[in-house]
Image 1 (tube, each protein chain N blue to C red):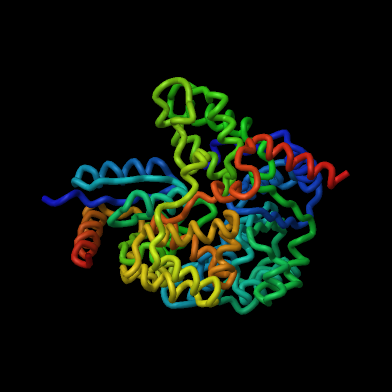
Image 2 (cartoon, rainbow over the protein chains, first blue to last red; image 1 turned 30 degrees about the horizontal axis):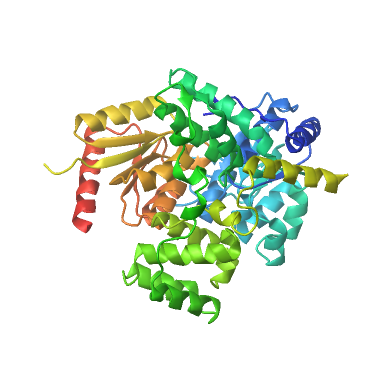
Length: 378
Length: 126
């Protein structure tokens, strides 16, 4: 599964700094919390740390904690004993026991229920494993925990969804993986790496990127981060017909639209009324828009027009759009899924540049951001 | 016969994927296969499968996580979860989610029977 070879690719200041912190983390045996957006490569970082650590002889055990019911997550982590419930014919060791003397990578730890957090905390404090159905702890294990999340745990703690004591247990060393848009200068190297990799894997000649295509790819914001870039490159390699990839070979969402195309199609009065109700009337998105859309009282074009109008207001930010349309922050994912599912998610970068510098070259812009950051750091 | 039913196959063992692909294609099914959870999520949307057939071990993920995801985002899509071992917790949760739970090695006839029944039900439901 990890045939890509785990490595941190790039020479940006952010990645260089991370590499140093990672080496320090590998020498230590402390627990680690890795944070960063979806797709930035938190598991890659965990693999590298494990590989360079004194525990590298053991296998890294990985589990993703999101979307698993408690009963299943508990039995996955702690195992169960024979007869603990109907049909438990034999003992089963959990992943924490499997990871004895090694490392466990627990992804999306921020999604755990409070009950599971309590069990994990107890384990972290004592190192003792109590299998489901067992009367007492039967083993003490030595496991290094690397936890990861794309959530803001401080917010989760404030809303009482995450235990503060568990947070401090996990957060001994804290590593943050930057989103790709904050290290755009690494995009060319990442592209080259994955183009070479996927060409070899699919036994194809290695295509070359034309400079204009490259600069568009560097300018793109990569909301899905390295994972998105990787999947994109695989599709690109599979589709490449000639040896050179030009802007014409790139998908729509990556190409910045010409200025004339920024305005969306005609908006009906219905859309205007809906927008009014949401933004000035403070009415809620789900009953005002979702319901008529699902019952087909609203067309897809109307929905697109409404979303575009909102994005103009928020300069391309979907997070702010969630607020503007009176949804709780927790609805962000649901909102995006809804738009994606109905093909109404508008590429946001066209709105981002709207008010500011329409002609600004995205590459220059990223360089500018980096300079500003460097200045701020100094 | 109407259009061939499409089955999304997910297993992190490529040998198994190959076997399942061949078996189902011989029976006239259309298949899409992948070996990673994240890819499977994308294929559920773009591949428009009529059935999801997934292994329980998908790297850091559990096949049931994919089953739950499918249930929430593609309601009505039938799901079969394959596993190498009997585990009542898994079985219970699979059944609660509406997925069919099969233990490997699954005899060819059992597998094909299950696939046929579930894809027929799916058609009726539409």
